[in-house]
Structures are given as structure tokens and as C-alpha cells.
Length: 114
Image (cartoon, rainbow, N blue to C red):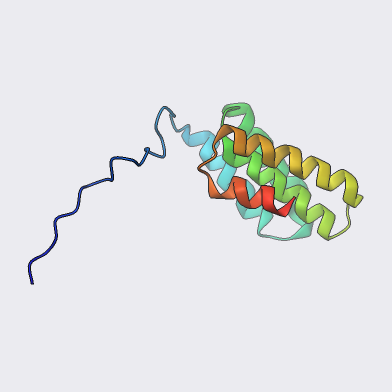
């Protein structure tokens, strides 16, 4: 059997970083926020702090907004905040994430959870 040559990238695909520059500090802060989020309910405040720091470094980044939406989602689940308030904040952050980058899966997951 002869191998079928494939193009390196389909012409219809856009590059993930097209037009974006990656700030390694902001990216690291975002990942630290995700790590805190995975630690459970007691780390939600710390996770949000990391996401907010990432946004201060790069306000046009969608991932930190998706992270903030996830924080509010978990606050509603563990009943740290009234459901209506948490859902409103979660949805606002998720919408901002989708608006900034509609290709980011985490943005759509956050919006679906809201």
C-alpha cells in the first residue's frame, strides 16, 4: 500500500495563535489558577486571584475568563455564594471568554455550564 500524502495543515484552518502573542507570565498565572481550581473548594479564592493576575498581564486573553467562570460555577455548586449571583457572574465571564476567542473549548464549556 502506498501512503497518502497529507497537507501539513488544511487550508481552512486558522492558527491557534493567529494574531496573538503569548505572554509566558500570563500563561503561567493562568496555569497556576487552573492548578488551584483542581485543588477543590478551599482553593477557589486563590484560583480566582491567579486568573485575575493573568488578565492584568493580558486583558485580551480568553482562558483566564473561562477560568473565572469555572470558579463561579464551583462556588454555586458548593453553595459558597447564592446561586443566582454565582450564575450571573459565571455567565458574564464565559461570554467574555467566547467573545475574545470563540475557538477555545474552555470558553464554550464555561458557557454551557452557566
